[in-house]
Image (cartoon, rainbow, N blue to C red; front, side, top):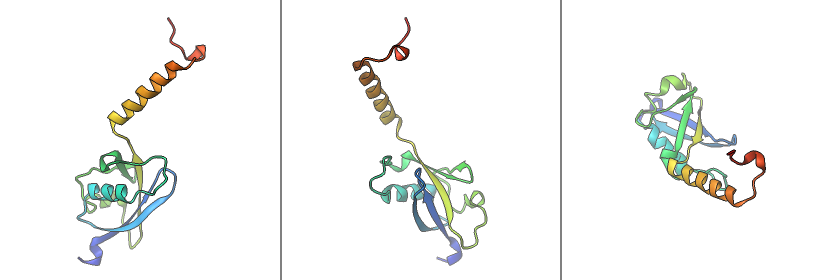
Length: 122
């Protein structure tokens, strides 16, 4: 694989810490990048993705599509001459998990004595 075909990418997490940099072929898909992020996610973070589907990658203000290759996304990355590209990582838990958390909070809140400003008005 030619050296020109490789791109260094670092992933910036929600708390400002980084994962990487890692070197990828321009033929690697965004989904491959997401899988790497999930497998190399730092221990002890309060938010942890369980699957690549819970990860969104953002570069130059654009959410990258799973089926695109790094080479196809190169324009949003800008022209990098030997530098490391930084992508921002957003973790978006699955809808089912979010619903469960909302239901737990909702049922828990009714078990407590809520202040009047938080109660439903009749």
